[in-house]
Image (cartoon, rainbow, N blue to C red; front, side):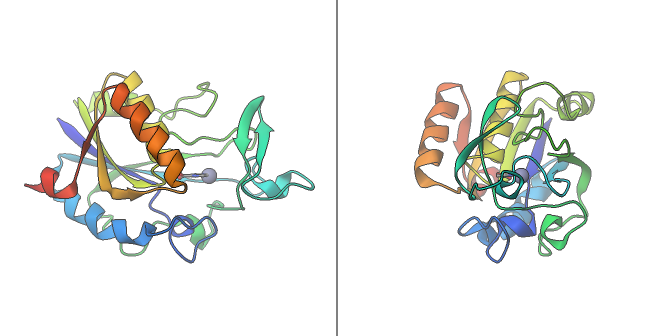
Length: 203
Ligand code: VGL
Ligand code: ZN
C-alpha cells in the first residue's frame, strides 16, 4: 500500500508567508492532483509555540537565516513562523483537505526543532507517524510539500530509515536553497530514494 505524505503545505511557506519558499504556491494544484491516486493521504503541520527555540527572535542579537545552536545541535535560526493557531500555520486554502485522514503536528517542543514528520531533529521523540503508516499497511511513501531541502528531505530520510520505499515527487516540492536541495537530492539518491514527477505518479 502506498501513502501520500503532504509535508507542511502551510501559509507561512508560500509567497506572502513568514518563511516563504519561492514558487511554493505552485505545488498546491499538484498536491491536489496526486491525492486520488493514493489509498491513504496524511499531512504534516509545522506547529510551533510562540518563542520557539528555532526562531531567531528567541536568540538575542541573532538574525533569521544565521546558524545558531539548539539542544546541542546546529540550528538554522528562522523567522517566526507556523505559530500554533495563527493564519500562517494553517494549510494553504487551495489545498484539498477532504482526503487527509491524519495530521501529524511537529515542532511543538520549544527546546528542539523538528524538520521530519517522523522524529525531532535529535531523533529523541517520535510523532508516531511510522507506526501509524505500518498499522495501515503502508510500504511505500510518496512525499510532496515544503520545503524540499528541509522538512521534505528530513521526512524522506526518516522514511528510508524506517524501511519504507521512498518516492520524492520532485515537481510537487520547492526548496528554500537550490544548493541545499542539490545536496539533499544526491544524498537521498545514494540512500535509495526515487525521484518521480506528478505526471508519472498519476499515469
Ligand atoms: C521548515 C524550516 C523551519 C519546513 C519548517 O517545513 O521545511 N523549514 N521549519
Ligand atoms: Zn518550523
